[in-house]
Image (cartoon, rainbow, N blue to C red; front, side, top):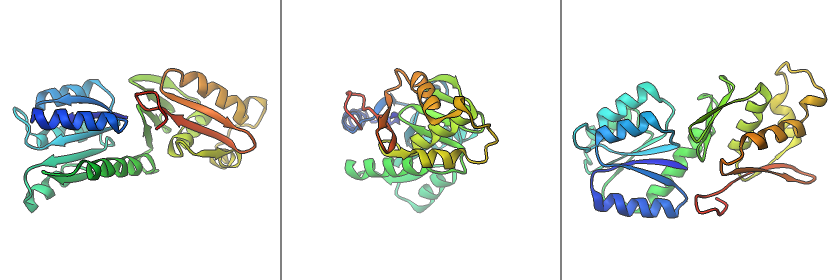
Length: 230
């Protein structure tokens, strides 16, 4: 999981980076608003943690600009301001969740994962993301660690299904149901096995592996940055 941490307190930022890395996130740190805006414009992230009290350009301004260009990126806001109007302003600007300082890391991690689950499984967004891989089924393309990859309609649907059920078995019946009614002619070149083979090649080096679970279906295994399964 690629995560942007926009936090100006160096002690808190260092501590959070270490804890987030241990939890399986790859962290890019922005100590102020301009750096946060630069990183958000140049890199692909799965989620962002944004402190509203950033220097030079405040976090609320960063969030408003972000929502104009990346409306689907999950954002959790951190702030020392516990006033109701501050919480409302952050949420109205586009934050997906809100935490006030001080906080316990286990709660922050739980909120991050809950926000990610909602973002990945919201069919209305049309975009599914997991561990640096973003799939836009409508545009029929994926962005894998910043690199755009073209997908056929069935590849896009299949990869989206595997991402939604990451680390769980997806049966051939589920795949057939997802493909039903897409207008693609059924033939030797349109079997699940053929598309799985193509996706495996396109996912090489992404930290993801499509595994065959004999007699059941397929499982998308996601590796943590340390090489262990997520």
